[in-house]
Length: 314
Image 1 (spheres, helix red, strand yellow):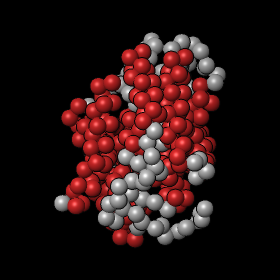
Image 2 (cartoon, one colour):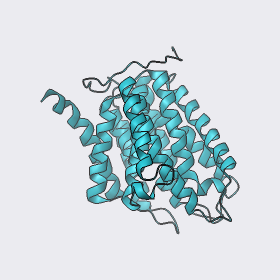
Image 3 (spheres, rainbow, N blue to C red):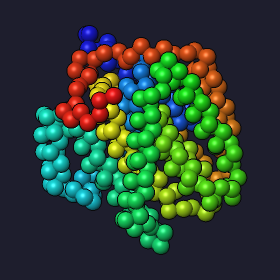
C-alpha cells in the first residue's frame, strides 16, 4: 500500500497531463513540466524525469497513429527482435537506467527508420546529413542540461514559465508561414537547447507550424529532437546522479490517457489556435503565481540509483 500511494501521484500526473493536453491543445510536456514542479521537483530531478517522459511518450503517440508490429520492423524484424530483448535484460540487471534507455532506443530506431523511409526520396536527407543534425541537436540539449545545474532551484519555476510564454509567442508570430524560412532551422535548433534546459518537447506545435518551404531539418525534426533527448537523458543522469521510477509511472499514466482519449492534432494550415495559446499563457501565469517550492520529488523505493560511471562530480 505504501508503494501504491507513492506511485499514484506520478501516474496521476501523466494521466492529467495527457487528458488536459488532449482537450486544450496545450503541449503535453509543458503540462508535465508544471505538474512536476508543483509536485516539488528540483531542477535536476525534473530534467531527468522530463527527458525520460518525452522519449517514452513519443513512442506511445507514434504507435497510436501507426501500428507497430515486429514483423514489419526494419532493423530487428521478426525473431531478430530477441537480440535487443536479451541485451535489455542484461543491461537492466547491471543498471536499470541503462536497461530502460536501451529498450527505448531500440523502439525509437524502428520508428526513425519508418519515418526516414516515408520521406520522399527527392527531399530525403542523406544518412550523413541526418547524423550531423542529430549531433548538433544533442550538443545543444546537453548544454541546456548542464546549465540547469547552475540555475537557483528556488527560481527555476520562473524560467520554466517564461519558456512556456516564449513558445506561445513564437506560435503567435509564426502564423504567417512565409516568414522566417531562412531562420526556421535556427529556431528549431534553439528549441532543442530549451528541451535540455526545461524538458519541453514542442514537436507537435512546431511541426504543425512548419514553413511553406520546408527545410531538411523540419522534415526530420522528430528524429533529430528525440535522438538528442536520449543523449541528453544519459548526460543528465550522469550529471545529476538521479533516476526516478516515478517518471516511468508518469509515462504509463500518459499512455493510458492517450489510449483512451487520443492526442490533439493541430492544423498544418493557417494560424495556430488562439484558444490553445490563451490557455497556455493563462496556465503559465497561474503557475508562476503559485510559486512551487523545490522540496524534491516524493521518494519511491528503489527510485534513486547511483550511476556506475560518475564522470561528473559537481
